Amino acid sequence: MSGHVRARVETALARIAAAQPALQAFQHVAADRALARADILDRADAPPGPLHGLPLAIKDNIVARGIPTTAGSRILEGYQSPYDAAVVERLEAAGAVIVGTTRCDEFAMGSSTDNCAYGPAHNPWDLTRTPGGSSGGSAAAVAASLVPIALGSDTGGSIRQPASLCGVVGVKPTYGRVSRYGLMAFASSLDQIGPFARTTREAAAVLEVISGHDARDSTSAQQPVPVFVNALTGDVRNVRIGVPRHLITGDVDENVRAAFDAALSVAQSLGAEVRDVELPNADRGIAVYYLIATAEASANLARYDGVRYGHRATGVTSLADLYERSRHDGFGAEVKRRIMLGTYVLSAGYYDAYYLKAQQMRTLIARDFARAFETVDVVALPTSPCAAFPLGERVDNPLQMYLADVYTVGANLAGLPGVSVPCGFTIEGLPIGLQFIARPWDEATMLRTADAYEQATAWGERAPATR
Ligand code: GLN
Image (cartoon, rainbow, N blue to C red; front, side, top):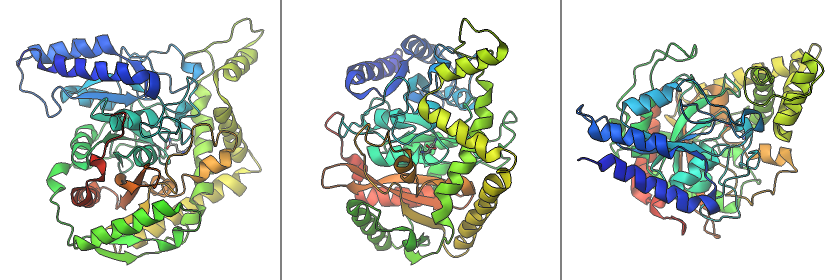
């Protein structure tokens, strides 16, 4: 077995290097670190871990010792973490080899990677289009088979939406399932780390490894971690799928709508029961999300002050000048917009009108889901109302960009697990994703449903020409 892992890692590194000019999926390729890791694994006498030798990429907002992390921002250019994220510790303990970081929107704010300060990643299915965001580089890397697995973070859809736009599987776990220790915070009450993979089975195996309690994240839950792959029985005859038809409005692309309806028919033919459910407050999700996420971001990003991390302005005249100049130079337009919005909604006089109202509405949205889950086991929705759009198209229209999150933010606001699984293609040949959302901690039923659907259809087996 000597050299086995090294050979596998070298293959991944070669594929990444060949694809990088066109795809820009990676932010930093940690070749030396990965090869050193591979050699350790090849020499080790210990029994191989469950992910032995698996080359894996992490989103550029998850820290690892010896790898620079920028969160797609100039303000963190050259930053290197002195510690490993909890997910990195767990993956490496399981034998995985981290080959680098993937491109994302600045501080994970966006749906396209257009907001990355270092340039966007490209969609392997059409290089002129977005891979989605904010974890677009991770989705593109897996879709192009540069790595079998990549991690992303999902605050309002940033794993599920790029998975959908790139034709791969993406899982956003229940809030509290995966430690956020070492994830650069965007909106702490919404952020979760999760895997991208080509199949639900691989995603399930990685999810099991990264899940579990961690005392260093105060919101990490004391919940037993099931062997998720054991849930993938292919049998969905006792699964009740709820469809909030009232949310599938005229704004949804007709290709997406057709693929969604066809997917429900497949689920039905597998023996699942498909019935309507109501989520009466879900159409307020976008407004609520963009109030809460910006409020939390304005607080979380206060730490980037030019003193402790990354970019520091020179030639300043005072401490206030240092803060202002460092942040002015370091942050991009979207991040500034969100800090201003978030600061506004938290300010005295507006707090009750915006932030408090949003929190109340968040509770109602969570209650809607809880009520739906009294009669169904999973809720099905399209992941994104449209397939991959051209890079740059929505940069000047942030509201249009925000509206693309309509089907994903609900799971974050309610803390629920969600998965996106490939469910077809548009007439232009762009992937479409199907989303299942489940009860808290019931990733098992959600993944069983996704896997059974995947087994019956095999949409994910189609490969982009660039693969
Ligand atoms: N597109 C959403 C936003 O811009 C979600 C981002 C995310 O999940 N990180 O906030």
